[in-house]
Length: 253
Image (cartoon, rainbow, N blue to C red):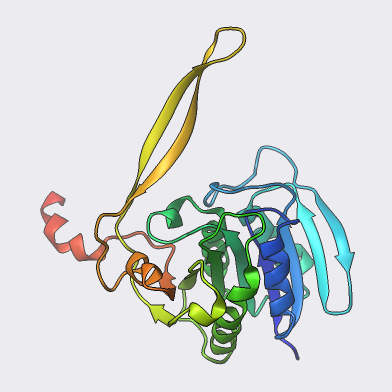
């Protein structure tokens, strides 16, 4: 039996990155695409529970079915697994995202929110992002790395309660140096909130962000991406800072 692969993203069902990932995934199994019907970037792991969710069939062929959902990426994973996959998916993929989901981006990303949701549901999951926001981004350069990672994961299951966050540098395929498994760099976003006035004199604020990373460690995603490598960071839904549990024991009474 061919593997069953569920695919979603946060850029929306019309995204070229999503369609490219689905085309590559079809080389490995049967594909079900369930993606937001709108751009849902930056929604992290948010869910929809104050209104109904609606799903539309976009297209259906022998080895791929494509649906849109008016919810979040996490909603897409939930409803895709529960109602539109004929069995539990062998693999859940998210992406290919426009722009980086390395370092601090992980906690804001709808792409990664979907991956973590799949992980919580006991599915193998991988998120793919390309460091390119250009609408005409060349996703062909991602193909060799995606094929290598999909082949590996389908033969060597990811450890339980763990998913993979994959980021691909903005380079031609022949200039990508390789793949590195590494840690997430410590970074932050500098918030730039510009106050403006609307036509009826009411104030509003427009948010923009600037990544502040300093000198990332040599074993981190930001370092390897700058050096021209694809990065693979294992991530988990468990946010416990286990290394600090002993030092905080004095709080107990």
